[in-house]
Amino acid sequence: MNNHYKFINTPLPYSYDAMEPYIDAKTMWLHHEKHLQTYIDNLNNTLSEYPQFQNWTLEELITNIPSLPKKIQTSIKNNGGGVFNHQFYFSNLANPALPHPTGMLSDAIKKEFDSYSSFKNLFKAAALSVFGSGYAWLVVNAAGQLSIITTQNQDTPLQLGMFPILNIDVWEHAYYLKHYNLRSDYINDWFNVINWNNANQNYMRCFDINI
Ligand code: MN
Image (cartoon, rainbow, N blue to C red; front, side, top):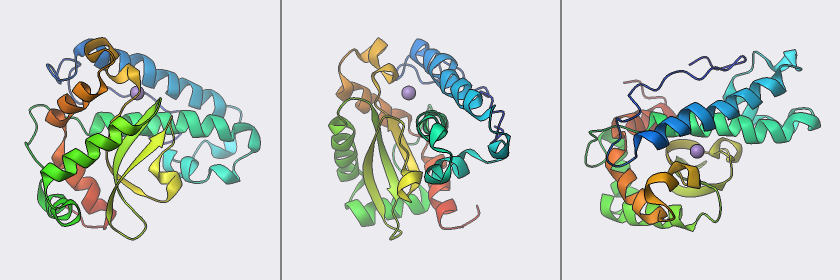
């Protein structure tokens, strides 16, 4: 993935039916080919008139929104955030998946939440609590601790000075075709397709540990 203008929608590292039966192929196709593509197109359109920001990375744009021209702040927040959040979401899916966290992240989850089981309960409750559209996240906060947070719309933890480890998209487009209005069922299914190796890499990268 190129990480500055002009952003392109690179293929997923798996097929659209790879998350079956937990996330259906049609949802994955629509989500990647239509929803993510629209955020990418809108972000590129916004940046097309601002060559001074065309070599900025996605992360640089998102973490510096207050210093961008007023006219493009909302678009960068919504569309830049939309690109970041979706790429993050798709990168954290795998099927078959490991049944539980791995490596340093596994130890940290046990330390912070007592057990993987209690983490799941807390994470699910957070994902269910998002009113309207948004995400639940496992992040490392400014104090270096694991924390579960939610964000609205396409806001990101980057804007809050937090480092993302794992996210679930709970916009209805992420599950409505298969799970209808039952977000709880979608969350239960999603727990079966978490890419724990990738999440552990995110965690280690956060502490500058190379693997
Ligand atoms: Mn989405």
